[in-house]
Length: 416
Image (cartoon, rainbow, N blue to C red):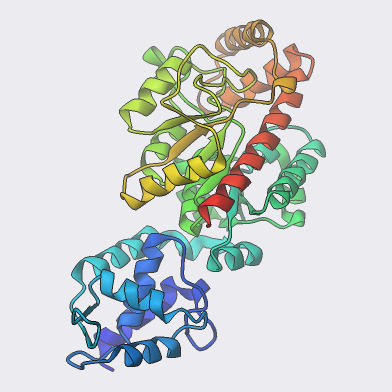
């Protein structure tokens, strides 16, 4: 084998490491399209240029390089992606040049260039390799969302709900400068005990945290990034960040919105946090081409409350419909993610007048105290909790549970 060919094979082995057995045979066909193309490229390297193969010979060669006994699907992928050409009657096959597909595989190599900093938990890696449903969960709610031990109890309860609904949970965090897709109970306990001593990590913080080997609590932004790196397409959270009130003068706009515009992950939440300017948040998402879906509702939920007075782009009513829409978005190669807004269950929703009064007071206090930037949201949520006698925290926990259930059910549909 010549040196360029050796280098190509090594690249494929690196990209497909979770899908190959000890003999470098495909043990599962990836569910993510770009990795599927890499797998097809890898198999194409096994064919000799200029040789004519019968259908039986093609199947025989493919059977040497995969273990899940489906040469028909692999042969079809090779043909449809222009690796193999054939006579119309299928009596002969031969290798052809697959320029576009090789380019897609190279793009995927570039997409996962940060993977040398990524640790995927064994359970999560196994699920992804087998095409099973996985749901990403954020870690900021553990470190900054509530006190210990309630934060740990809640995080473990969310993971349990994801499992009960048929998916594998992958809590996302940064520990010791490593990007973690999936935490052990001990790591969740560690996060919970350190609490707010762990820095909130957005996109801008990753280079320094990684270089210095520090911990980071992942926001919506970094959870989306790391989930996508690991190959996870569905993410459940409480609420997203957005355009803050007064942003026309402060320019305080959450990085979550930019990440939604560029990273292909479905984010299931209870709407944008009601401490924000919801109208401007929706305008920003529209400008960035992010579809805002209402799950069982035509009105944007406002985190603690089921209504906001603002409409969503589309209403969808089942996990299967959500999965179909997201699958179509990915198949078309459209840039960016999808935002699914799932109203808090009615029995846990707060009175709009009560929560609005608490938010207005908290915002006034934050301005008086000169609080800004990434300190704003934790301050406002803590003050709202205090001003509502802790009711807002109880609602927050229940809406996270509700989103985790829907995310798992949607991931199950997406894996079919």
